[in-house]
Image 1 (cartoon, protein in one colour):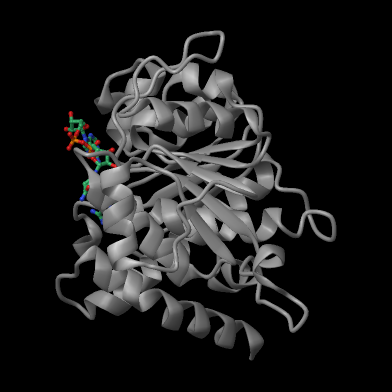
Image 2 (tube, protein in one colour):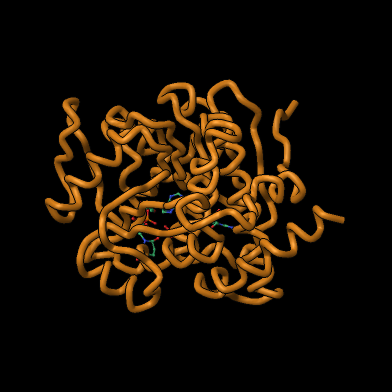
Length: 292
Ligand SMILES: NC(=O)C1=CN([C@@H]2O[C@H](COP(=O)(O)OP(=O)(O)OC[C@H]3O[C@@H](n4cnc5c(N)ncnc54)[C@H](O)[C@@H]3O)[C@@H](O)[C@H]2O)[C@@H](O)CC1
Ligand SMILES: Nc1ncnc2c1ncn2[C@@H]1O[C@H](COP(=O)(O)OP(=O)(O)O)[C@@H](O)[C@H]1O
């Protein structure tokens, strides 16, 4: 018997924090992004674009200089100066990061970026860990609650198993990694599965197959980052961003991502920037439907 359960659009809508009249940018939430590299600067641009269009008080983009220039060209709203942050996205478009037991990052595009990654891992804030940062040593250095966002290949690498084993039973592979590493796991694919250790298996299936396109995962990390930062900013009044809540936010991000992809696709191909452009109307439609 499958223990999978689809997160409904109404549940996803309930996880979107709508700003109230007394909200200013810091109260809405600040997302820090350590993404991109000179090899993959586009991943930084896509993640920032997706986060801003999902809705957040501020994005601080703190990755390497070339990527920062491109991010600012596309999105002058992004702030590239360090400062207050309530949640972090780390890893999309970065090389393989590995942290030694003492928290030392051995490989990173630039020393300043490595230092910032160390700081983010030690901050205690919720962490969305993507792509090359999905490594046991990085997870061991993380102090805050973590959700990882692997595709099947990245989950296989993390778990030390063959990708065929992940594909044969993706739910079991995600659940095993969650238990082993003490993190929430969002395993991407046509069906995206999200699970926290010992929690229910939440799934999202809204995405059209046209979504299998380079950079789609970078946008998903940005969407999840925005949802997480807005919740982390409200922790005192609301539910803490613990692992079960991170899993719910992950499933809500996957629902939004899939619905925005469907809206952008309209039955045909889409680009990731098309998906991002469709996010505000997708959020509005989700909230509108939940209101009725
Ligand atoms: N415009 C950009 O800057 C882009 C940057 N990207 C970044 O590129 C880096 C590498 O991404 P990839 O892991 O896709 O790299 P690769 O395409 O180099 O793949 C690495 C390995 O993972 C396997 N793999 C890839 N997708 C898989 C899947 N869905 N299931 C099973 N195995 C899979 C590949 O076969 C390969 O063995 C990441 O940091 C990513 O964030 C990508 O998101 C593409 C767009
Ligand atoms: N066949 C598919 N149908 C629908 N969505 C898919 C399919 N394959 C992949 N996706 C989605 O596309 C995105 C790809 O992310 P990822 O593998 O990280 O690629 P990239 O690193 O190029 O961004 C994920 O959100 C995943 O759920």
